[in-house]
Image (tube, rainbow, N blue to C red; front, top):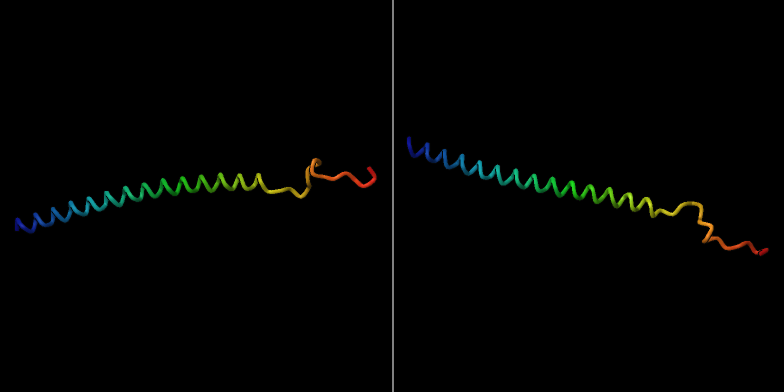
Length: 67
């Protein structure tokens, strides 16, 4: 009986360690996901600001031929 109890305690400790390791890994992955989402948002904003408009700037326009 004592040996079975000892075996169960060891199994419980191993499972507890495994759960701790998995929990840590999930936390780290969540941090990576947050960082990636912020980077995607930043790049989307940058891309929107780089999109050319349908109307060109006055500096890029060539003068009409009658000048």
